Length: 172
Length: 370
Image (cartoon, rainbow over all chains, first blue to last red; front, side, top):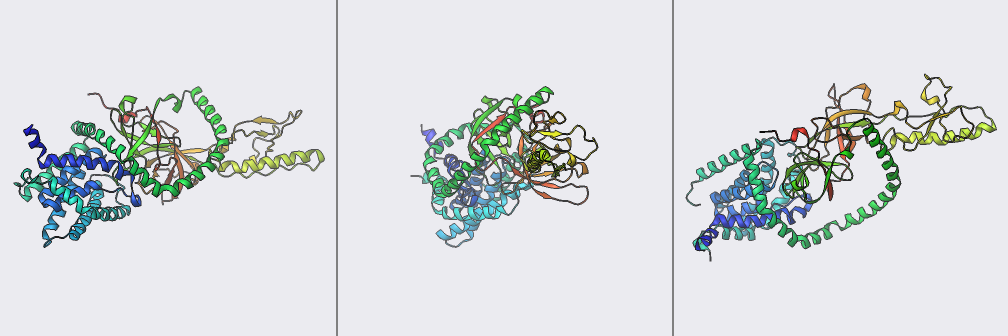
């Protein structure tokens, strides 16, 4: 029993379980609620928030895991979303480390920008692996809407990721 | 997680991604197994979340879609009223066409089994156009099978699990299909035949005028060249080389008029011409296009509104004559390139509900024997 509890307390286990729940929201409610015809990306929010909460390296690893889980339910090549989400998590964490005394609004700004960039990287990566027709003007609308909505939800998401990715001794 | 250096983390993640992408693009079975395993874990959670979030979904749609639904309701009522009459004639026409195809040993959709399913979700990505249906391998669905709804073709199956299948829509950039464009015949202008002015012939002239009006409208109908129920009579004494405009068209044949024969098929010159091309999806916000149309004079000028159907064939992804849509725009190109045709898809891909999967697996999609 103690062994199971110890495994459950590992950051990666918690991340997997939380990402599984967030993914189920992504594929159901956020899939049908499409403001301006854009599907909101809460999985990307999880990546950026991980970077903001725990720095660039852990942000990249968390982004990779989250992206990989997202890839497993999408028809895109496995690993493509993972690399993009890892990059976004890394960028969010790295830029946050440059900010002297980060505040709530700087975090929102960074998360919005990283999410928007992620939505531009994704079609770029798809084009590199041979998918045509994804680079069009609509991606600018997608990037803008996803950036704004993710920025709005950054603070609670960052707190969630801070708890998820904390070391076992820190959890109470 | 804290022991890894920055460079090492980036290198490991990048290499892992490249490896996975390569494996997936080469259709590795281990990637498919991983997707299936993850699906088995994830689908129960997704199902539970779907149930929990349905009230929120309904509230959202109630707020955002109410106006559209009301307008759609009015429009659909009007549409139903208009189509009720046409449906009866079309059913008879389809029946006759199937009988003719069966008589000549040609393949028809009636001979292909199908499985009806309901759309339960769409792709959560902004960059791919797929939907998920609640039928899968247990119903006989396999990868590559064409999927259609009441209006026409909507896509093909790209993934099949036990009770679920993923359908790639025809607007997806990765979708391609061989299609036929049924060109409309050029508009026919018929001139009423000149008959001597006599009281007896006065009646005939009136009848001719009425029928002429119908013939002129015919090319604008949904199925060009075919007018269900139309009866065309020709004079046997007329010279075979005489222009068709000289023929007398009469709808009212009275007893004793033995010199006028009836035929119930349209004139050969009005039969629609067909040309093949390749339909390609172009993403969510753009209509699919048809390429590789030969610029040959026999085919004539393509008209906006010409029907586009699947062409069939041994290597085609779909059986022949499934309605895809109509030509909505023609983009002319210089030289021998031939025109590009923009297609207005017959099915409304934004509000899919019940769909039919034809249990027809193309030869190109069948797994090869080990």
